[in-house]
Length: 164
Length: 305
Picture (spheres, each protein chain N blue to C red):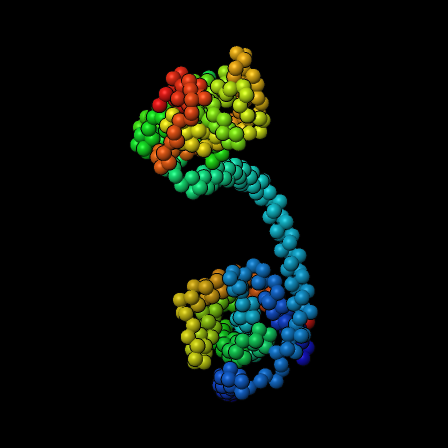
């Protein structure tokens, strides 16, 4: 509980920033997905199991707060958290390029999963529009915010480890 | 032993993950079709998050205001230059618009006149020049023989008589105004039907005279003077102006009247040339005006033709 509460507050804080501050600098209503960045960074630092849990928590908060199809965020972020955590064993965690590359791949993966769900639910979105107007800006913003979020998450991990 | 335990843990984690993923996968479809509601309602989450979001939003607004102000200050010089340019452009546009509006009024008047004066075929012309030394007496218009304009065609505006074409070039014509001392036009007092000649006044170029009126004829201030149609140049009934003052001639037998022209010759910009008139000119007046009236031999334009 001592570990969970700070992380929960941290996730809420990040979500508040994402939903209230980032839209002011967004492009066509699209801005960075800090929940995804948090999941990716946390997974690389803490492993697959905790990464999947963080993905679950971040996705749950997003799904409940934004009111889209419930579960899509949980599903995608949980899987991304798990797989990023799996890869964390095979890479050198301190290098700065890691969050950038993983964020690009994770953003595309999450978008692909969302699209698949939307198709399975019977909707037919315009793929070109989706790529051009939604995915590209998201990739840009996520890349910009990847390092700051990674820094914050790693500092949080260090702080909690020291506290422990 | 430790490795086996780790492998078991890993396998169990994966199975749990698969189970959760499948469950969530199903939840997505059930919730999309309204068959599943999250145990924690969305409203509750939003309510909990709202104060934080409001605070963050306020902070964001503050930051945005500050950055906007800073940006405004940084770009104020450039904005000032742009605004000055815009003001200049708008001023120029405004002048042009006023010009168009004035032109519109003038052309509308001419159009109305054209619609009213159905007995005339009119060619609308723009005043493109005035004789600089005697600008009140002669003008140049931008219509000539190519447009059907010929010598001795009357020129009017919606307000009244302007003059007559004295020289028609291919694309422009010279118009002698009724103010010119050399011009004369057969005229009638609209009320009393007294006939006379309207001639340019060398003493006051803006006030032509109605001359050759016998002293005992009825003519008073305020009477409207119109063309009589005698002489065949000016059609009958075009307003020339109104009587401002009646005076006795020095000879003792005649009187004359100073006419205030209906047309404002100082602001003459568009005129109409009567290229065809369907109304036949009336018969000359009886002998009373013989030698003095419209058919007098000393008339250059109004009488002799």
